[in-house]
Length: 120
Image 1 (cartoon, helix red, strand yellow):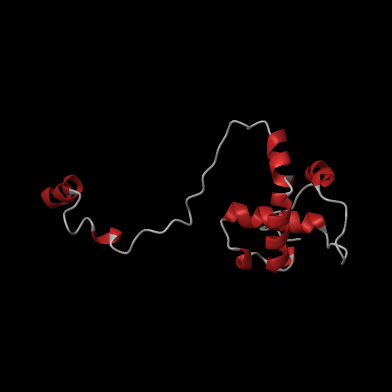
Image 2: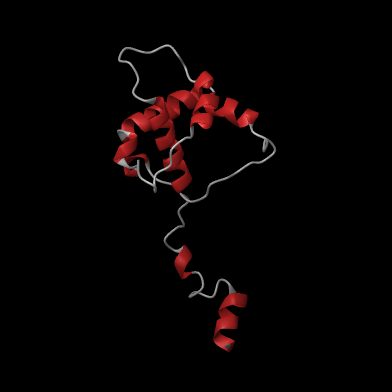
């Protein structure tokens, strides 16, 4: 297993395993540890599911498991066990600015910043 990929340790997976559903739906699940590691790797890196490395399995599997397990509360239960329960994190990496936002300085809509550049 490569050094630049995230992999759950034995202790981490042992803590997560009781939270996972144990009733298989049709086809037996592939390695849960690999899938959870892939989910964490994608979320930590701010990746789209399709950009997750192939060592974690198909991106569709990562996405489907994340959605399914989130709905049944697997990740919420894990967060509730965390020592940082009062922490709220908001990820704004996927917010887009309107195409005119880049031209606001040129149009003088922020005169303090625009004037500082002209004076220098």
